[in-house]
Length: 442
Image (cartoon, rainbow, N blue to C red):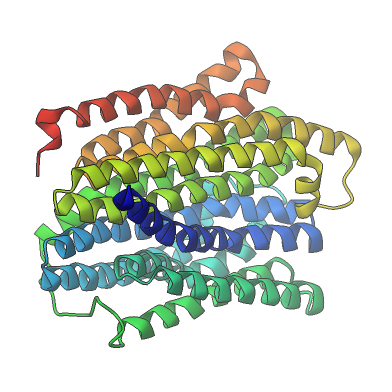
């Protein structure tokens, strides 16, 4: 009993700051949406929404490197190998910097192509260009902040992540207000505010890892294919999970505008922020337990691993229930956070589709949680299957086929249907990984 209480306290110690950090991390684009929607208008809010898949790509890169490296770091620390842990840490930071700068440069030089790829057309395009061009310039800081935030937990300082993320979120709020409502910079002001807010935690994390308080430290490392392969093996499934959010938004943007026009897209713009917040909350829960499970797995403490898995699933269930309950109790108030001066027909429609869409939030966390657990116990190929199914194959099939058979209204249930179908596969893979002959694998 005492051992279980210790595990529970350790999990909560990681969960609360990680959850706070991820919610605040989600607030960057959400705050932009709120200030843009209230201060500029619904069209500008749609432009920010259309730009979100690009930031998702950068976050997916950061997640690939951070989750892959973090699993290797904590596993090596569990084995007592500090030197290898430092090497994976240093390699992860260097790789993030290099790739994020290359992606930002390519995107900025080809911004018109990127806008077309994102579906930014008509009156939205000019606003989306203004917003995205600034976001692209700051995007390497988005990636580095995320990677550092994951590494700080592997380093044993989750509270520092919460402190720096809180300062960053507060900076974003203040600058959004100043740039939009005082200086009247519009959507450009929102982008600059978000970008500057990302620079602050990057500098803070860097200073921490240069001090004696840090367990991890920068060391020279071989830029080897073996390191890259190991990081990719464990990080790629999580990256696909993050990238799937952008893919989902992109498909829904195009499908909704075809079936419902700009008004439907404006309604979905509100849902997007809720969806990202819920998904990031689920990711935060999984990331709280994942390094602990990986560390315990490295020590062959399978009982602790299973206890942590139970805690992760309980937290996922509670988060999903809370999210859906709030959406069903306060839908109008949620809409008014993002947009004002709305006609009753728009509000009625948005409330209806938002409630329908929200049922997906009860399911998707379990797919993310099962995948994260499987990677922690060295079954990343199982999480890869789950990520591909839930984020791409199942959703693509449902969103492209179902509306032609069941009508346009099924669009708002497409994510729920695809998540349920994926969960059946996830549970089967979880069962396979728990077979005694497999669980003892190293």
